[in-house]
Length: 458
Ligand code: MG
Image (cartoon, rainbow, N blue to C red; front, side, top):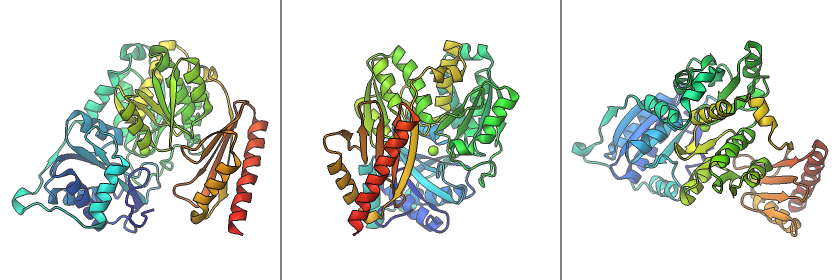
């Protein structure tokens, strides 16, 4: 995944451990990050992966060599570390995590003093230091020091509780099944939920960096065990997290799994009821449902490119309080402007307690869409030309070119056609009021795209 002359991908630096991401490379990246921060104080933590302690120590070696002081939290959910960076007024933070990737991967995420991941411009500065080796080493007498940082997760949990009606939730005595994929979500969520008066059943609750229970990507196909347990034991709710616990996917009391833009639309609805006229941020990959809710409850929707950092940066720029992604990331700025799985869970419980309704009923009341997906192979070198041709051929239609091409049709159906950032393919997502129309739309544009690519090849 590590590409030439570029270190950072859409979510930090990622690679296979000891192949692409070695301790030597991590140390050098630590030196580059330390040079960029110019002797500041940084909080460093890591996720549950087997390689995380090794890589954290390598990054810390590099950072302290430049004179940066380190507050070392040990294992922590990404949003807990981001919250600590923001509230302790340090200069930034580094977390060793590969989020939802398989166990052989790891990565390095760098956050600014507000807890938000660095902007692309800031990443470019680190890449320049790294590739040009413009490192600033400290004198032996000025090396950074290393202190343990205790209590980070407890203060994160306390902060989340202040944003919901804790006594109302407590009175309900919900029974919740938590599946944190044998990773760091287990360090925060069960405690938060017990503090909120819930009965908690955990699955994949032990920390194990080989992720024996399920892969750390909380896609519906990986959550069948969670769904069946929720139903079997008669729990009120199930919730699954990704490997670093910034995304949450929910299961209702019948064992039905919902993709993230549905639960985001629910949070959006109740947020707008209390805050009419506010702006909401979401990437173009989200369902039209998010726009419908904004229109129905007097909000204004801001579409962005796909990627959590873009959502956070857009919220920061325009002082927007709520953002969300289709993959289960919800950004609630009164807490922090980054996606946060535990905060998302508390918001959903707050809505359930406030309305006295089950999740199935709350989600059933939202507008419904049918979704169809497909993908088309496209060599890397043809991706840009393909997009240009596609835009030419969709002229006259209501389109957005924020990220790929999104076409909105009059009958509320839409299709997003977008080159993958990591694979030689184009992805297509069609959405319509009925499955036939979604099917028709995906077929039409899959054919069109294949034809464009074939013509470009010939
Ligand atoms: Mg994540």
